[in-house]
Length: 385
Image 1: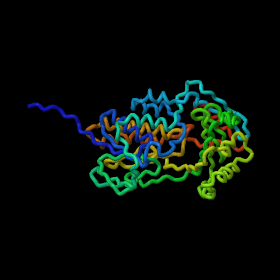
Image 2: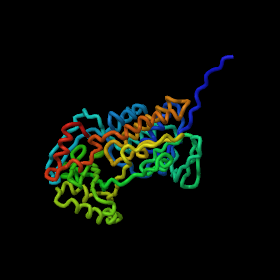
Image 3: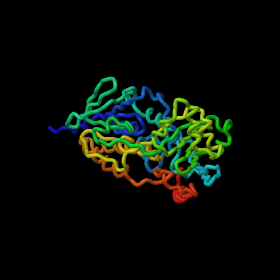
């Protein structure tokens, strides 16, 4: 008597981390009928601020959103005009003023809004909030045990570490840990800038500002309305920052501002006039080309796999990793290991590619006599936003 072919049983996927990469993975898995559960340390979607603007590129991040069938939702949250760019010298001289003419391939969105559309696209209960992972261990035969901070455990035969720079899943695959890059940023915000700080608002313009110098850089974005979000970058050892008391916002901003003595006041106001306490964010990175031998039943994506200093690509690559992994699992319904191996064959060379503009530290392309010369030469040869 003939038998009817059965639908392959899909192995449920356990995802650690509800960042953009983990959520993209869960979304694309859902579209392919593959069950997943995402475990996230944060107590809720609103537990902390999600960062500022992201430029989502048409050659990686948008490909992931297409795979997730979320392009309409994406277009609805794009902030028009934010692909404009201005480059200023420290004395305030404008050396580049590039408008957003609407033809760029890197529209800007708020990270929080991008995360929201991914969360809204998932079945209720997919994300388990307040589930902080403390460790993971291999049980053999492709099975792994995950331990949570409250002592609870779960066992899974398909574990994905999407848990960022200090991943608790990474040690299952690799002993490598991130190292300090030598540069940290101090994050600030100016609200109602067009009214309260018009000179600074004019300096930033409608999109992104870069004010570079060797060892010191100021980046700023115009976010929604007249909010200015700045990243003040300093190439200093960690112990230099340790000597600053960031629990005293006034003293901390004054100390950081001293490193920019002589800069134009419309630029230093991004430090001294901040409406929020300055937040220190050291930059760490995994070695370029970080990879691992195939370990049954588990893999990594995003910063857990290929953490780099902020370079415009991290969120885009994390989402593309998630989409690629989901599609590989869908393409190999009867062979999880074949799916993970196929995914990693794509992942490793992509994350090791030579950096483009977004991967170049601006301090590496300056000359002391003309600190913007190398940057402008680079910009002349490619479109950036």
